[in-house]
Amino acid sequence: MVKERARILVVGGGYVGMYTALRLQRKLKRELGRGEVEITVVTPDPYMTYQPFLPEAAAGAISPRHVVVPLRRVLDHCHVVIGEVRSIDHGKRTATLTTLATEEEGAGAEQLSYDELVLAPGSISRTLPIPGLAEHGIGFKSVEEAIGLRNHVIEQMDIASSTRDPAIRDAALTFVFVGGGFAGVEALGELEDMARYTTRYYHNVKAEDMKWILVEASDRVLPEVGAEMGRYTVTELRRRNIDVRLNTRLESCLDRVAVLSDGARFPTRTLVWTAGVKPHPVLAATDLPLTGRGRLKCTPQLTIDGVTHAWAAGDAAAVPDVTAEQPGAETAPNAQHAVRQARVLGDNIAHALRGEDLQTYSHKYVGSVASLGLHKGVAHVYGRKLKGYPAWFMHRVYHLSRVPTFNRKARVLAEWTLSGLFKREIVSLGSLEHPRAEFELAAGGKPPTDPTTDSTTDPKGSS
Image 1 (cartoon, helix red, strand yellow):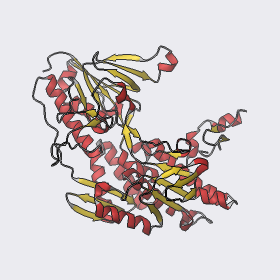
Image 2: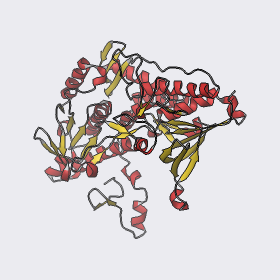
Image 3: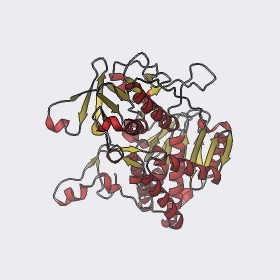
């Protein structure tokens, strides 16, 4: 039984935020029923995105709504607030946040008091001051970006099929991906696979007409699966006529021309940036201790070092790896650790409220799996190396077991089964990005303007 009424604030609705709140619901079920505990989750989106499925959602293998988990349904004993925490004064136990209604109310940001803080805002894309990147780059961290990229790729094929200008056709069929980590390699592999399949429905666009380019600043891709599997991945991608450029950087993408450090220039209408992530900027707006890389200093019990009543895990936290041989090692900021950390975090908060001893987070990294397209993949798990179909099958089995809720597992499995029986869907729904454009035009208004080109937008397409 908790000693006094506790208000728990969870900042973030991603892996750590959702799983921690879910664990707290179960561990503190009786206390919640008696009104001794109150759990508030503040998140900018009303859903948790299962990011390992984003490449398959972009390729059309999974419906977008099955890649996300609705928080209000899962966290039915929590108070879910759709908004963003702007700053935290842990000394006063208050968080400043804005919601969807803040601007309309005109009353300014709200102050929310708490007793226990769980800080799990995740990470954002790490960008560099590259000319033209902000105007023309496309990210790949959200389901909206994944579906937008799918629509964009198919639209470029439509443009190439209908234009008479060779330069426009060449730029439309050139796709540049920057970053050789999981996000970049899996997104490139799935989309190239989808686009190659899609060419069978175009009378004048062939698979060999497209240029797919992967740019990586280091000398290897997918470092998590080991050097041998990384080399195999490069060989497999190049066998598919994908231009993999290692030890190469993007220097500029002004005027939709990708200029690389090796001197190559590629006119392109598609530049996907997946070159790493950085901690969420809200961490800098707190009075909590940070590491040199901007992450929260944590203990093996997932408390924030030197601070009471504050907890963290996931991408935002620098958690010591007690299983590592070298001193000072930290757990990798990935989903494998985040889900397990959230479980321990939820348990430890319950232990702390009841005056019990805390657990130490300890998990030895078991390996990684990656998909390179339909029936293609690489894996390095428990010291065993797999490639091709076995690795792809392991990738699907593992992530199906990890996606939250039985509801989502059943829906994803059903979609995979149906996709094996029927042909791929190759429809672009770019009009979803501007749903009112056609009506505004019919009502006498002007079509919306694409800010990246200062040109009007086609009501049926993205730009």
